[in-house]
Structures are given as C-alpha cells and as structure tokens.
Length: 290
Image 1: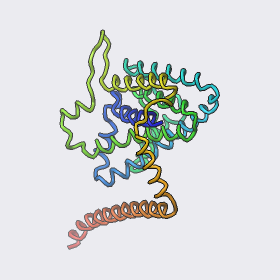
Image 2: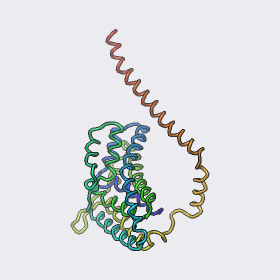
Image 3: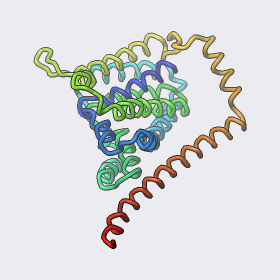
Image 4: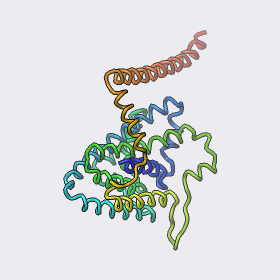
C-alpha cells in the first residue's frame, strides 16, 4: 500500500510536469493569484475540485476490484501487464485523454474559462484531474492500481494522493515563479531527444519507467504484498500510537477552530482589501468636490 501511495503522489507530480501541460497551471496561478495566502486558498479550492472528480473514480474502481477478490492471481497478472504496457506507452510519448471518455468534462473546461475567482479555480481543478493527452497513461496506471487494491477506501485514498501530487508542486512552483531562472525552468520542463528516429521527452521517459517498474514489482511481489515496507515497523507503531492519541473530541475541536480561524483570516484580509479599494475610489471624488 505504501508503494502504491508513493507511486500515486509521484504520478501526480509527473502529470503536472508532462510535456503537454508545459507548466501552464503553475504559470496561470502565478499570474492570476498573486499573494501567498491567496495562492494557498486557491490551491485548496483547486485540490477540492480534483478530489471531487478523482476520488469518485477511485471509489468506483475500488468497488470493481472487490468483485475480483476471489481471483487475486488473475487480477495481479492483469494489473501487472496493463501497468507495463502503459509504462511503455508513456515512454514512447503515446497518450490518450480521459476527459473525452467522461461525460461533462468538456463543459467543465469551457466553464472554467468563462468564470472568475474561486469558482474558476474549482472548475479548473475538476477538469484538470482527468484532462491531458500526455498524462493519460499516468492516470490510467493509477486507476489500474486502484482496481488492484481490492478496497474501496484504499482506492479512493490513492486518487486523493494522486491529486495531492499535482497540487503540492503546483503551489510551490507558483509561489516561486518569479524567482525561477531560465536554467531551472528548462530543468523542470525537461527536454526532448531522439532515439532511433523517434522523438522522446525526459519527463515522459521517467514517468514511463516508474510505471513499468511498479508493474514489474507488482508481478514479482504478489501484488506488493511481499514488497519491502518503506516505513520501518517501529515508525509505523509510533505513528499509530500518535494517531490514537490525537484522535477524539479534543482533536476535532482544535481542527474546527483552526479551520474557522483560517476562514476568518481570509475574510478579514478580503474586507481590508475591499476597504482600501473603496478609499482609493472615493479619494478622486473628494478632490473633485474641493
């Protein structure tokens, strides 16, 4: 499960950096959002849009996976083969756009261009989760792993982590956009190269190698059951003890207070900004009356 979550997070990052997107989302957020706090708010709304699109897909495929729980070996073999094929397709730059197969996504993309503010950010997130020709094999691999989980909740969690893999670098890149030099930008975007007359791209090759490697690992470790744990057992026990300690009504109350404080802070900043705008509007009028 740990390897699946790490793969999902890295897949989200590579989908954001895929050649087709060419960092359009970070550039959009950097140019239209501006302030750091406002960027975090819009990033959270963008992630909410992603989650409302991706997680239901994961939950549905997780439910499908439970139907094959009695045929685990066939599920493992089929998942491994699909992952390897998707990885090779990603390496070769072959892709497909999931948004064309899902109803309503084209309309979401159109509305995202006509709306403004947080509504536009939300719609952009809802459409971006499944859109993108270059990122199609990556999302396909994550969805395939979601089916193989054999658990509805774990599959939904995987797609949520995939969305987080898109949002975290998106916010970081947007916040640092003005400070990123040309050399760093070229490194982030990757570069194209030719092998046997075929044009490839470094980001696609890395993503394809990751997917292919997970496919091979999935096959050789009985569906990652015998794969080595990325987190030591002692650390897992400590984390479980900590989670049981902080759970309960006190933690829930603290979480509610933190969320309420964040909302109140955003409201105060918007109110002050509106007041300054009104003052600047009224100042020329007062000068005219004088």
